Figure (cartoon, rainbow, N blue to C red):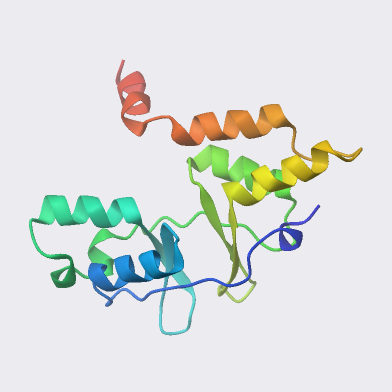
Length: 159
C-alpha cells in the first residue's frame, strides 16, 4: 500500500517570519500539533511542533508573538513521498522518532501529511483483512521508539 492511499491531503503551513503565536493559533484552530515551514516557493524548509513553541517561549523568556518561527523550527525535515510504501514511511518515523511526516512532491512542495494515527488506523483496517503490510508489533515498536525520551538515548550514548 502506498502513502497516497492513507495520507491527509489538507496541510496547514507557516513561513519562517510568522511568529510563534500565529503558529500556535493555527495549531489550535485546526487541532494539530505540527506545521511544515515553507519558503516563498512553498518548499518545505523546516518543521515546527507545539512542543517547539512551548520550549522556545520558556527558554527565550519572551512572548510568543515576539519570537519568529525560524528561531524555534527544526531544520531537519524527515519526509516521505506519496508513492512510498506505508511500511517505508513507518520505518522513517521510527528511525527519526517523529509522529508525522510531510509528504513531499518531486518539486519539494508539501502535498500531504502522514501521521502515526493514519498508520494505526490502517493497521486496524488490515486486522480485519487478509493482508497486513504493517504488523501490530511493528506499530507497537514504532510507538515505543517515538515516545522514548531522547534524554535517555543521549545518556545511553554517553555511557
